Image (cartoon, rainbow over all chains, first blue to last red; front, top):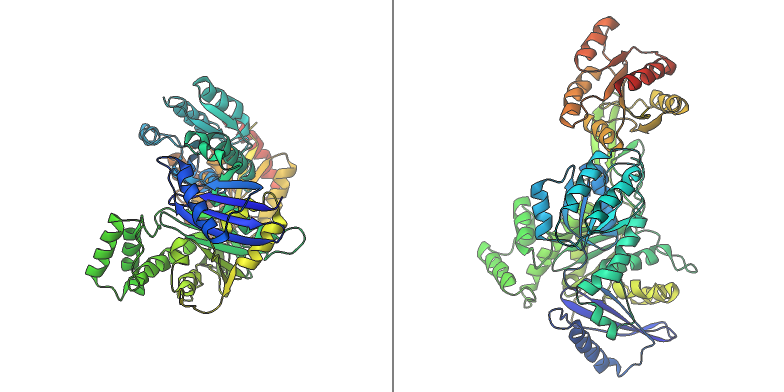
Length: 467
Length: 137
């Protein structure tokens, strides 16, 4: 096997990436707008066209794909306590590359049910109760979900004692049910991997069919996973190494997008100071968070609002009218890329998005005065000593000030409670290949690792893009 | 018998030795112990008890602020739907030389089922706990 094509059917662009396994190199990359409404293959064909205009005709031994088109993989989750089983369920769904379109805790109400019925998700992840713990809520919620008239796929990952009963209730009403081990078998352990796996398998076996992505298989040998999972897989490979070469050990990926800003981290995040007490759920080593309110196109107005209310200077050189005008033009045309001068408006949006998204992803340290002296409680991961940060996503790659956008992820001594990286080395996914390399890693981690090491660009000072 | 119990040191109290000893003794006695460790808030106790369907919440307080920290715990349990859960508290619950009977009354009024003075051996509260859980079921 030599030439391989890796395809990412994104929500706006279909990206293709050709690699030669033999030479361990990237042959080329190209993209074209995704065409979900007509036939997803049109977009792919034009992307391949523009790729082969550069590389010449290539014959491929294998074509692998991932997708976040047609709304991605939508998952609704329910748990019992918001900070416990619901939080664990959310982490599991995000780690599988899903988009969370609804989350509920305690008993599902009639109002919750109308939200669910209005916007039936690809998968409903039903959790609640530790093993041997609360049974009432998950049984109640199963009965509620059984009353949904539309077809619904439910993944059950709650209290094992009632798992059979829950599944029987749902199956009786014709729902497709998949039972997983409890996502939170005890209060101090999370078991997200089985849920991760089943969500991804369902995505491939059923959801792609329902979304008209199956026709892609005429040109693609295998559609393997949702795109965000492919990115997470690439990050994990980079961190852990390929089995032969050692990896970077710990890293963060910042993926700025038009609809969301995603942060992926692969690190333990144990506390680095003395006398710090860890609190709350232990975050998984491989963790993804998605900020659905921080897409630099779909949510430009919320980003600006957040910046203005924080008095952050990112937008200081735009007058109120300037800002309004630009927000309106984004609204009218979300695929707009600003002219040279106003690109810094996009930078301002990206900076604020990174600033907030990384703050939400990283852990926090809270100071408490006790009779024994000052004590610190840590929630989430301590990433202050994180060694590497990798930036990706269209808005970043088009920017002229990539380093200053990425630097917004840094620790801020005026807000020392946010445990963000202090001195990371920055890399740029310049050719936009992370998802493709995640795909490639399923057949050859060694090649994927080697190509990433060649293609990811270290940035230590601002380069002037395009000059 | 439901053998799940939630254990922790309440408030801004960082005394962890007794907490470990209790965890050990309770586990040895056949309980499934959900140990939340030190500096546990009322909300953490309740969330853990709801999620794990615990039979009892066992609160320790060593640093003298127990009264402030424990006030309202029973009310919050009622709010959270675990009205009947068994609540125990023990340790150096108040500062000064208040007679323990007075302290006990105060905490019982707050809704604790049993109140233990400093130096109570774990066997004592374990035997009470077994009885109370069976009676409560």
